[in-house]
Image 1 (tube, rainbow, N blue to C red):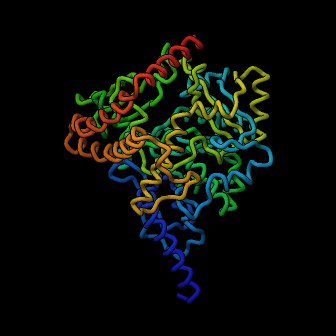
Image 2 (image 1 turned 135 degrees about the vertical axis):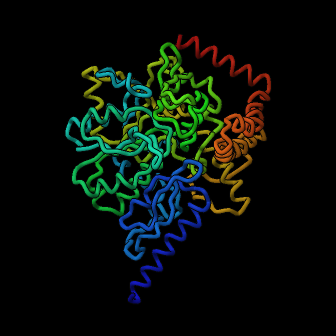
Image 3 (image 1 turned 120 degrees about the vertical axis):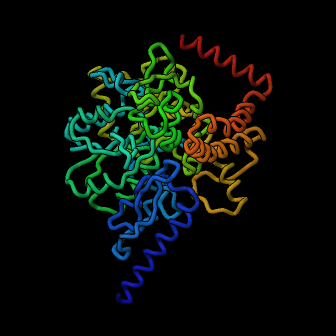
Length: 485
């Protein structure tokens, strides 16, 4: 090895070591696969013992062949750009800026009227409609998004990123997937297969795609559109297994799951879960269960959450050309068929939507950026005010953590809200360990037994609110119900 080659190899080793010692060892890897997607990357993606994708060293790769920084494409590295730095050159010329939803050209709430998109989707069908039309109108040759897959003993995954090149394939990939996936395989597919692509992902994944595009000319040329899904947080594989186990399908025997089964006549946020798998008697069965009747489904509890999600400040995919989520607003939530919020940042997508509205293919109301942020109120509270407190606690311990646009502070939260944040962190961390212990013992009750004390403490924080606050909340709910009735 020449002196220059030795210097280059040392830089790569330092680059990888820094990522390992900060993001990965610190527990902040979200498992997106961006670092493993770099050509000749020394990293690969593997499922850990808790059912989360994590980056690990690939001993078979020649590290001297790596020319790009693995840190600069990681969405939780301090070497990579933040959401504002990525989105400003992309959208500032044509869009307005909002302190919560970022840049926006147009903002809507509504649903698709045509071809059963709404019926097949988790909500209003807008996400699938947008990428289907990008494909059918020739704006892209393929859509990269998450599909169901058949699990096996060697590969137990229920979902993975795949390529759709027909509208029927796109339709088959509809629905929300609260499940870990990684992108390194499909990123390589884009490199190997010439064409124009749209890619769909949660905010941190789209951020990672944008970072990859900044250092890879092929990806920058071929990825034409990025669509983000509003995100509460990413779940491990155990989230799906928790649902199935309560229906009598033990971990390892789950075959398919629909996380958002619409229940006729119920509010949009009172959906069901449908699982299919092998029961104890060896028979394959399907069960549909209202989500409110299942243990561990309160999103605020954060069961099976990746640690990285508690250090993210992007709720609505600020680096994406268009973002789609649920319209959790009082005027829409009563509709069991589902309603989307849509944040458009790309002129071509805005034109496509406006033409479809004129043709009565879409039923969309123009809403304000403030209303979009209000539709995700809990998410923003957790990722802004809550995040500031969690950053403060991490800094007090002298531990490394990702640099965020939110500044650390503590005195903005009262004691109850501070304890709520502490319990959310504890519940997320303990859920991984508790479920593994329950699986090893073959007893779901052990999972519940370990977490119940924390769950009860968490729930008591809401019960202990002053009487006048509870009365105000009750009156607000009453008025909202009257308003939308």
